Image (cartoon, rainbow, N blue to C red; front, side, top):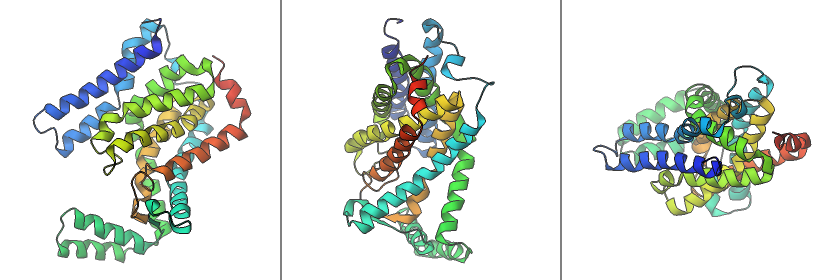
Length: 310
């Protein structure tokens, strides 16, 4: 096991998460909403389970994985949350440029306005089987709120941040303790780019059972597996950056949890197109993350050197 620590980590993480998912599909009531939600949270803890199984055998301390209570560089924690909040805004921008300005149909139509939000809500309520009277009542309530499109977006982002820094942070820690904790410790000596590429693909494929079941890309489950790998690879550099700069894995969990919390912020201001391109986890989101990652890579050259030092 010590001879192949990375492979051992991946095997345990995959076996736990994939096995849990397979078991949930066979259990009575496995398709219910609450069961799926519970399985989704437990699924995220597969990498942490691998850490608990392997850490002592590999001789890796909690501090080496960034699970510390002292020495945390708090300003980078704040920047992690700020980066996460910027991602859905940048995603909307790229979807607007590619869809509305360049006319690429796959990116749909983007408009940050109250009218667009009401239109999307109406479609969602109708597709959920609400009666015309119920739809009209809900729309009337929303229309009466003294909020414009920008304010609605800000409210959603703030709400997502609160979730990301509390409940979502604990759930995301289950993943980050593995990906940016043990796996980063085991692979950082190879350099930043190899770590980002390897972790991004391994992390993306780990999501495969959920994606094939319709998560994130309900219209393209098979293509969604490849898009998820692109998304996680684009996320890997910002996550590695906050992990190293903050000196703790908590910052990566905060960024990850907040990203999960705010990812759907743009749904009310976007319609049409493909979930692979204009969806909250589509090409627009990948471009947003790549932009942030490129800025960090270019503006902080010392980070690349610090990353490779054990």
